[in-house]
Each structure stands twice: as structure tokens, then as C-alpha cells.
Image (cartoon, rainbow, N blue to C red):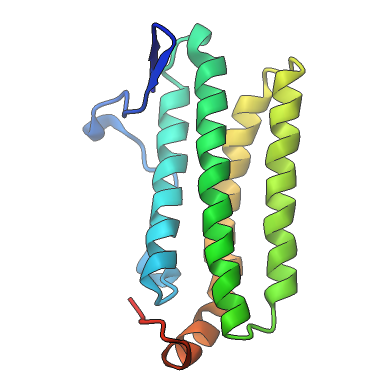
Length: 163
């Protein structure tokens, strides 16, 4: 992302050959539901871009970058959580409430990080990036795999087509 004349433009700042893939998609994370898998891939791409971009953006662009990136991420993650939770309810997933609490905890952590950053705690950006990288990976690899079999078994009953 580059900020020029108060306009923010998203793009990869580094050539793709130099970008580091901090969190890598694996077919073992597949839920069997294309919508969820595509959203998970987008989240991994977002975290990878954030990790790469934050190391090269100018110091005076950090505030604008952080605000836009986190705003984008929170908006996207809320849509993703809503999609997951809707499928959990539709398929009567027994771990729904626990999974929903994990989602809510994630949002609260991000909101707290944003408030801390706005209060002048500048190290929050690096801490938040590490949190996002670890959380997204762990959530997909550990938490979300818990519903894969349930979703696959119930996909046909609820008009969901596996990926």
C-alpha cells in the first residue's frame, strides 16, 4: 500500500519473487466448502502481504497503512466468521458456541490492539502482525479442521456443495 496525496492505493510493494510466504495454504486445511476455503486463502494472502509490506513502508505511512489494513481485515474477517457461523448453525455443528466465542475473542483482541496503537503504543503493529500470522494459521489448521467432517457429512443435506 502506498499513500500519496491523502489517497491510499493497495498493492504489493515488493516484486512477487521477493515476497515471503509466512503462512502457507495446504490442502489439509480444506473444509470441502469452496466459499470457506477461498476465504481462508484470502486471509492467508492478506496476512502474508501485511507481513511483507509492513517491513518496507515508510515510517510516515505506518499510521495510514495500519488503519486501512486493520479496517480491511476486520471487515473481511467479520464476513468470514458470519459465513462459517451460518454454516455451523445450518448443519447443527455441536462446537458452534465454542467456535463463536473464539471468533469473538479474536475481534476483541484486534480492537484492543487498535485502541492501544491509537493511544501511542507503536510496537503494537509488529505484535498485531505476529498475532494475526499465528492466529490465522492456528485457527484454520486447528480450530476449523474440527468442523470439516461435520460439514462434509451435512453438505448435501443443506445444499452446500463441497469444493
